[in-house]
Figure 1 (spheres, helix red, strand yellow):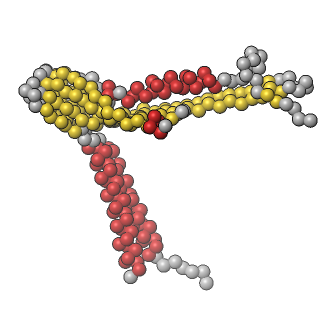
Figure 2: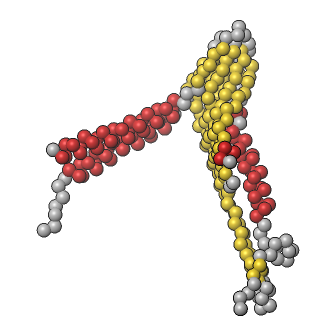
Figure 3: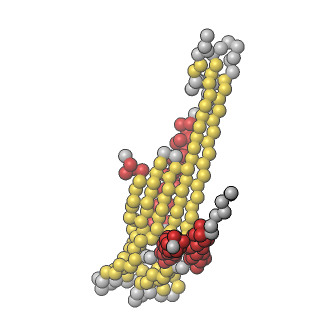
Length: 150
Length: 92
C-alpha cells in the first residue's frame, strides 16, 4: 500500500518555503542591476578647472546570477504527521569598471585623451610571449627521438 | 522572444560646455535571463556642436583593449607560425 503524499501549500501549519516572494525580490534586484546600462554609469561628473572641463569615461562590466530551490512533502500517514520541507537560495554578482579615456573640453576645442593601462598591456605581451615559448618547447620536445623499449 | 533577453542600446547624454553643445554617447549590451543577467556598457562617440553650427564627431577609442587584442593575436599567430616552421624542419 503506497502512501499518498501531497505537497502542502497555503496551510499555515504546513507552509513550505514559497519561492514566489524570492522571485519577486530577484526581479526587483535585477531591475536595479540593469540600471548600470545608463549613460551616467559610463561618463563621470564633469570636473571644471578654469576654462577647461574634463569628463572621465569608463567601461563597465556587470554580471549577476541567482538561484532558488524548494522541496518538501506532507505525509498523510497516521504514523507520520510531520511536515518535511526546506528551501534555499543564493546569488552573487560583480561590477568591474575600467577607465577608458578623458574628454577634455576647452572653449576652443574638444579632444579625447586615451587612458593607457601599461600593466594590462605588459601582461598581454607576456602572455603572447608565453604562447610562443610554449609552442617552441613543445616542438623541440617532438624533435627529440623517443627511445623504444626493446 | 530572444530579442527581449538580449538588448543592444545606444544612449546619449547632452551637456552644455560654454558655447558648445556636447552629446556623450554610450553603447550597452544587456543580456537578461530569468535568474541573472549581464551588462556591458562602454563609451562610444562624442558629438560636438559649436556655436557657429559646426559639428564634430569624436570616437572614443579604447587603446588598452586594442593593444591587448593586437598582442594576443600576435602571440597566437606567432605560435602557429612557429609550429608550422619547426614541424617542417623536423620532417626534413
